[in-house]
Image 1 (cartoon, helix red, strand yellow):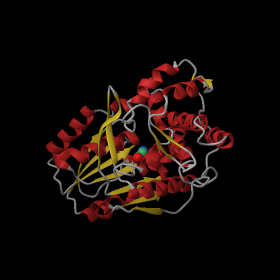
Image 2: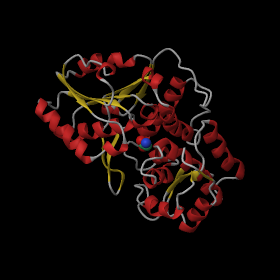
Image 3: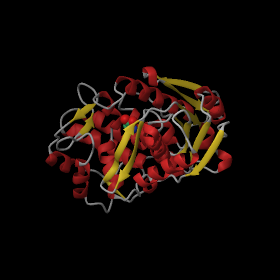
Length: 348
Ligand code: GLY
């Protein structure tokens, strides 16, 4: 995969949510702003929960509790949240203090939920360290952990006080993690972003965050418009579960995006050129477009019924004559037929 170059300079994108508005700073070295932000909040203590080595986790400039957490879906559990809240209590963290998360999307999700629940809510600053977390997970206030029954089934809306997307963290990102983030960037092409493929990575992050900020500002609680951010996610989440998370989130979303195009085509919502564009865009990011070879598509249907958007039957966010929207009660036979027609390949 040829990767866009880093660009210098810091971009600041406002998430305009009235009393809960905050800025997302994107660029090299922005982690150094942490102590200023903590001071501006008036916090006297900080609980810094990090999946990165201590030398890569910035100093919050106040008395700090440091807690190590591991990135990974298997660590995103109610037990992890309880452990964090216990550590905050032992440290004497108050509602006037601050929690800091530093890590990938599973870390910002878990720490964000602990911050939402502890003392019924303490401010949290996110320092996302992966492309996936910078373009999506750390922005918008969705926090959650997984249950054995499904992904992100227990969560809360809790907007951060600030987000610092330090692009220097990406310099050592493994190839698989790039793909994980690019799955979310690729789906932006179908929900309102311009062509992001050739932009430097900081611009890709900024464009994705700008798009997300506008959607979240219009529908913070995911009652309508925000559904579009879940483009490709109904199948994506099911694939993650069906492969025991061997398939990464962004890879699942990439395959789910191709599927969403094909399903919209099968339902007569878009024409063949638009269907083909889905596969072209996803491929152009070096992302998978095929279902895992050994996977029985029948296992995916019950998993997709668990999707939070599907209050009855199967629900998908699909392109169509009126743009992208949530389509409920999609006939199961059409979903099964479209799944059966998907290309197959070995897992990446
Ligand atoms: N990741 C989808 C959302 O934040 O709504």
